[in-house]
Each structure stands twice: as structure tokens, then as C-alpha cells.
Amino acid sequence: MIKLRVGRPDVPDVLPGAGHKVISAYRELPLVSTQGDGFRSFVQVLLHAMVRPTPIVVIDEPEAFLHPPQARLLGRLLAGMEVQTQLFVATHSADFLAGVLEARERRPLSIVRLDRASGTPQVRVLATEAVQALLDTPLLRYSNLPSGLFYDQVVLCEAAGDCQFYAAAFDATKDAAGTHENTLFLQTSGLAALTTTAQHLRRCGIHTAVIADFDILREYGGLRNAFRRLGGFADALRNDVKAVNDFANGTRVVPTVDGFRSAVNQSFEGSSGLASLTSQMVDDLMKLLKGASGWDVLKKAGLSGLQGDEHAAAQRVLDAAADLGLFIAPCGELESWVRQVSNAKKSTWSRRVFEEGWYAKPTSELRAFCESIRAFFKDGVADYDRAVAQALRVNSELGESEASVTNASNQILTEVRVIRATAMYAGKPIPGSLWAEGAATTGTDLAPGDTFTVKLGKMVWVEHEGFFPREATELALTVYFRDAAGLWWERDGQALPTRLLNGPSQPDPRPE
Image 1 (tube, rainbow, N blue to C red):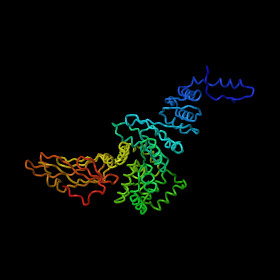
Image 2 (image 1 turned 45 degrees about the vertical axis):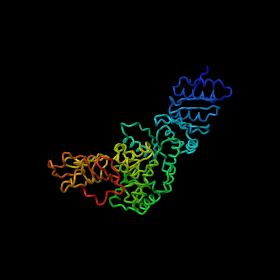
Image 3 (image 1 turned 180 degrees about the horizontal axis):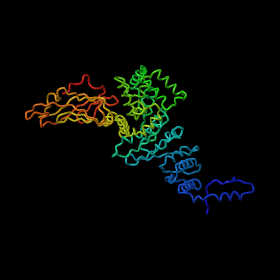
Image 4 (image 1 turned 90 degrees about the vertical axis):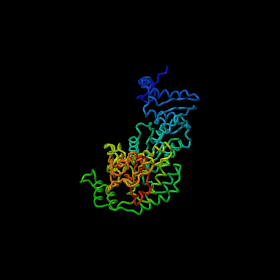
């Protein structure tokens, strides 16, 4: 009976004339049989595959009982074996797969993925060129990317901090009663690799979306390439991108005295009064003196920094990109989702957002952004307007003596206009004005949970004097409102809000 031992002896393997010392040293090593389940499984798999190979070896979940580093090492060793045998390995371990991909001298490799998202398992053999692309790109090969092969869908972000925030936002906006979302957020260490990585993952059969900052619109060539990698064309959007850039490049914002003072204080935040100026502080001061460029503003403000034709042009680009799975932050950049926290230092912003719980209080705009990504994964089309409309919870009601609009969202509505009230009586619309004399039909800054009301006027009916006939039906309000992102919406009765692309009609229709 052969007894296997494990460890490193404290003498060299070859000692001239002292073979007994080497044997004695090996006998002092612990037996493999005394090791834990994981290590014994590790050795057993290697022995079956390497010592007595058969034409075919089937291994089920070799990572069982193994620590992640051991699973990675086992994958690397099995992939590098020089034996005439074919291995079939079933695994749920991203570490084991990463080890296989890391093997320097690797035998021919095929990866078969089981997709259960549809309810019925679907077998997909990953294209050889797609797998090779993963292996030939060091940034992908030595990243956490192999984990994505075990998820139904992957969202790619530029940096680790973006992944943390958007993963938390997805969790905060999910339907608690809905199905489990098997979504992984991965970072690609910058904008350049975002859509290239998405292209590789999609070729491997992984549903993949990409999140980018607003300044991806800054360069048409890069945006066009991103569209092509995601299966689309940006040619029709060239003039829209140009319109945004013409506006940004023709704009320079000089700060006010108060704004300059605040920016300087932020730059020096946390520094001792006796400390020397750093090069970063000097750069910040020079930028302040020079004034902000249009793109400096748009990177932080996004769509809200644009008006009129430029706003409509940027929105068309964002809509087209979203339908390809490229989601451009309408607020500008990551830090603009939570403006209550200073973004002078990105690391401080991220820490405060999580410590102070802001990540769990998504605005309706962020909620809509997450919902549009979910819609893309579910339907293949983002439909941003629908997602925003579902997130904007604005309740309107035509009551007995007043019309009311309640902001049930978690963001402020900067303006609310009650346009008309309608009701039916004896099969015909009620004629005449329903508003009380002098009633204000426009409200501003409606905070979450607040209600704006408009008094109704009494009228004389055949059977009584009051606000409505007793048999009146189909009471409804038409309301215009503007959200925190500056977008105008119309809600007619109990229907979902629809976007007013050109804003409210000017002048407003006379309330009826």
C-alpha cells in the first residue's frame, strides 16, 4: 500500500552518501490521508488525471471543499497537463475557470455554458475566437471577468467605485416581490475597454450592458466605435453629437466670488494651514482662475446643462445608445447622482454615500435609469421614457371640492401645472370652468410627499347647487410637471406620464 505524504522536507533531495537522511525526512512529513477534505480531493483529482490517465476523464465540481486559491491552482494544473486524455469538467467556480485561463502552456480548450434564464437549460459552446480574445487580453484575463460567465447578465462600469454604487442602486430599486436578479457588476479600469469587453462577453452568450459618463459624447469617433462594437451605427447621430459639442466648446463659465471661495475651500479641505501647496492644489486653482469649459459643466450636469435643440439632440443620442445597451448617465457622472454630498474628492464622496445611507435613497431619475437597464435585459430595448414614467409617482385626483396633485416620488418636482379638469354628465362633457375664481393652477418646488391643490368653483345644477352633478362620471385631471432633471411630463387622468419633448405648450392652454 502506497502512503502519500505532503510538505517540504528540511533537507535537499540529494545528499551524497546520505540517502537514509532524505528518506527519514520524507517520513516525517504528514500523510495526505490526515489532511482536510479539500486537500485530499485536490490530490485525488490530480492523481486520476495525471498518474493513470484514461482516454476520457470526467470531473464533477473539482472545486468542492477547496479554498479559492486551491481551486485556481487546480484549474491551472489541469489545463497545463501534457497527457493524452480528454478532460470534461463541470464547475460553478470562477476561480477554477480563472486558473484554466491563466495556464501558460494550455491544451486546446472549449467552454460550454449552460443558460437557465429561460427556464429550460440551453447549451452554448462559446466561440473559440471569443474565448481566445479573453485569453489574449491581459486586462481581461487577470480580472474578475470569468465570474461573468456564471451570471445571467453583466453590467460593465468604468471603475470599481461605479460598480459599488450602481450595484447598490440596483438593489435599492429592485421589486422585492419580483424574481431574483442574477446580475454582476464588473469594472474595466477605464472608458476605453468598456464596449470592447462588452463585445467579448456578448460573443460568449452573456447579456451585457454598459454604463458610461455623459462625456462619452465629447468625441464622435469614440462614440461611433462604441456603437459598432455593440451592434449599432451612430452615423445618423453625427449632427446631434456635433450640436452638443458646439454648445460645450463655445461655452466658458467664470465662477462667482462665492463659487470661487467655495471651490477653493473644497480644494483645501482636510489640509493643515501650515502644509505646502500640492501640485494638485495648484492645478485646481489654475482651473478655477481660467473658468470652467462647457464640458466641465456638462460632465457634472449632464442633460440639465443643456436647453432647447441641444437638449433634444443629446436625448436622442442617449435613447439610441440605451437601445444598444450603452447607458449614458443623464446626470453627467457618477457623483452627480447624489449632489447632497461634495464631490471634491471621489474617494470621500463614495465613502460618505455609503456611510450616510444615500445609496439607499435613489432619486426617481436614478430609479428610472436602473429600470431602463432592466427593461433592456428583459426586452432587448431600454425604452427610457417608459422607465422614467414608471419611476415618477405623481398622483392626481379630482375630488368633490378641489383638484389635487401629490408628489409620491422621492425627488422634488420643480413645477406643477394643473391644465384642465374634465368630467362627464348625461353622456356629455361638463361645460364651463371648474376652477374657483382666482384659484392658482401652478405650483413650484413640490417636495416628496407634498400635495398641491386647486379649489373648484360651485355651479348650479338642475337638482342641486354644488361642484358636480350627482351622476357625474369620468372625473379626471390633466397635469404638466417638471422633474428634478428639468424634463417636462404630462399625466392625463390615471395614465402613465408621457414626456413633453418640447416642454409645455406656450402659452399654456387656458384651464377649463
